[in-house]
Length: 164
Image 1 (cartoon, helix red, strand yellow):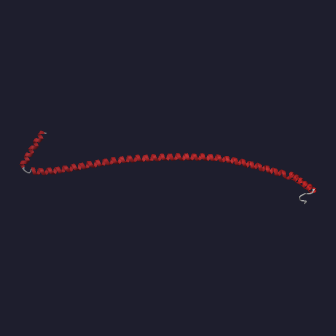
Image 2 (cartoon, one colour):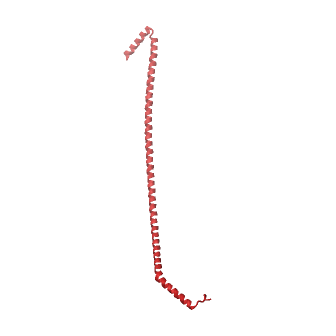
Image 3 (cartoon, one colour):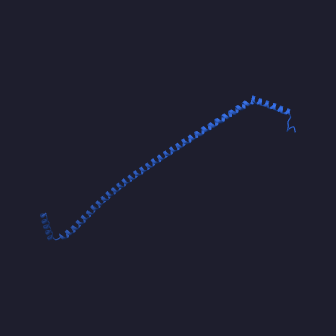
């Protein structure tokens, strides 16, 4: 039962040991413990401040990244628009050149057709003239084979020459 109701001597010596322990701890251990706690508290505050500062820097970096991304998108859009304009210009130039080339080819074809037409007409006239001369020769040979008819024909020609 001594454990439940301790004796007066035991309480005295336990109190004395406790006070001695507190004195020893206060003299040698309390200051270093408090100093280490203070250092720990300071380092925690510094870490929190650094974390807050890093958070702010991250927000600024995100904002900067978003601005850079927007600028990059704008640059990309500008480059694409410029490329479309250049493409349209090249297509228009090609269309104009093709139109000019087609007009030149048509003009050349018309000129060629006209030249061939003139050559064909000249050839046809030459053939008609030849055929006419051949026919006239046959007719004259037949008509003028008789000397009497030759004389009559010459007189008719002379009359026509005098009137003209």
